[in-house]
Length: 287
Image 1 (cartoon, one colour):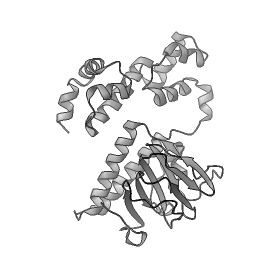
Image 2 (cartoon, one colour):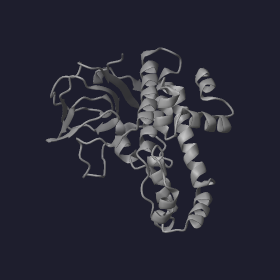
Image 3 (tube, helix red, strand yellow):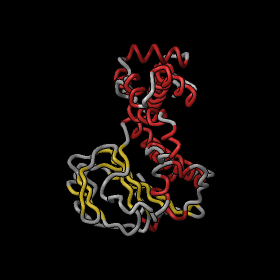
Image 4 (cartoon, rainbow, N blue to C red):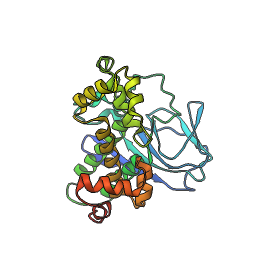
C-alpha cells in the first residue's frame, strides 16, 4: 500500500501525483481537514457513511466519486467501515492537451480547481459509477498504485499515463455537455438514454415515441447517427460491458449477464460467440 503524505508525493516533472488507499477501520471519525492538492475519491465500501463538507452532508454508497479541491474542509461520519481510494494531484498544473475534453461534463471541474459551477454542492458525489465502471476504475487505480511503488524505467511516464487514463474514464462516465445540435437531432437524447440504461429492459417503440418519430423514421435516423440499428447498438454496448467484466473481475457468467442486461448466461454466451468468435470462458483465460 502506498500512503503518501502530501510532502512525499512524487514529482512527475510539472505535477505531483499521489495515491492513498484507506481500508476499513483506518479512517478517523469526523476528522475535518482540507488539502493543498485536489483529491478525487472512489468510494469502494460504505456502510451508513456520511460525507460532510462546508456545513452540509450526504450519505455515500459504493461507486460514488467525490471531488475536493484545495481549501474545502470535509470529513466522514460513521467511517468505521469506510473503504476508499484517493487520487491526489495538482489540478491547475496538469500538462494536458485539452483536445475535445471540454465536451465532457466533468472535464473542467476535475482538471481545474477554479470550477465555474459555483452551485455544485461539495458534499455530494460528482458521479456514481456502476459496478462494472467501478471495477474498471479500481483496476486502473491499482495499476497506478503499483507503478508509483516500483522503480521500473519510465516509472513516472507510465504513472502519468495511467493517471490520465483513469481521469478520462471518470470524465467519460460523467457524460457529455448538452449540445444545441441535440435539439435538432432528437436521436441524440435517445442514444444518451441507452448508454445510461443499457442494463435495463429497453423499449425501442417508447424511445421512438419520446423522440417524436415513427419507428421507421427513428431506426433510419439512429442508423445515420451510429451506423447501427438501435438493437445492434444496445447489443454492442452490453457486450462491451460484459467483455470488461470478464477481463477485470472474477464474477460468474450468470452475474455478468445480469449486470449487463442479458436474459441469462446462455443468452450472453450465444451473442458473445457470434460477435467475438470465442466463448466468454476462453476470453477470460487469455487475461
